[in-house]
Image 1 (cartoon, rainbow, N blue to C red):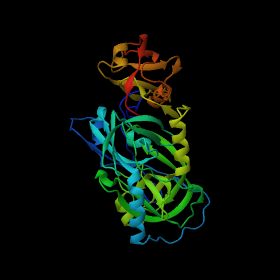
Image 2 (cartoon, helix red, strand yellow):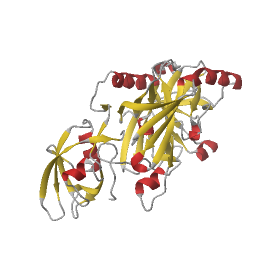
Image 3 (cartoon, one colour):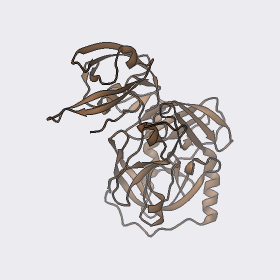
Image 4 (cartoon, rainbow, N blue to C red):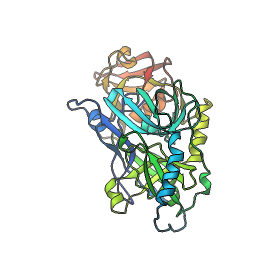
Length: 388
């Protein structure tokens, strides 16, 4: 099995994937572009993708037969966009360890600058800024917290006040065949949000998303399925009714080619679920899936090694960043991580999960085996790492 860099707590991670089910491959619709070109670097090559791919398997719940696709009248669509746009922001996340930028969309929840977006938009971010559509100002932003499983994050714009907010609707009242409008920072162009229309084609959908860079999968459930042709950069943006209320947060969509051929599909997290998780984050209530505040960081790239003639896997250090906790503790490429605080580490994803509850400054005990077979144990104080 090829090595896989864990994101967030363990080390820099990528974002991508491939595959497909009904409608073909589906991607996370946020834009990534590289800031620099480097030789033979897996993370940089993946980060250079225009829009990362998302392998998807859709499992629809029993839903009424979708109505034929319709579009809202242009005048109504324009009116809805004019009403909703001031409550949106462009999200620009600098992925410092990947020499890349991730661009998406956010929805303003409070006049003081709390913003809702997808976790994958800020995954790996070492710095985040937002540009408010309502007033045109750009703010530095901090990550208040995130939920990887739900793919939800909350940002706080620094020094913001008097911002326009979105109006959440009741997503449980959404019906198949209903006309909907998606707004967002399509292709990362900024400025006035792009507009796309379509209809709801399914409810309570489940998708399995495969991340090619990290060789991991995640499951999102209870989603709204539409035929709205969202684009890269639209992640975190609103799915809106013709009455102008937000019913969902756009999260995944097919390629432009698939939408043009009539086979495209898009998925949105119901706004009720998104705001519920956001409320938990805003209240500072951490859980098994919700991480509050800055992310603890070991500063390694790790890979999976399958032990020959067995099904056992090991977590191998591929790279240790100079000056970071792992390197200070003595880990070098080729070492096999055995445990963190006494908990066995069988894979990079297991390492990431173990470090998830920790924050910068927390001390962890690492045990590892060097290539000669000698066992080492040392303590490391976690550094501040990228958002996960």
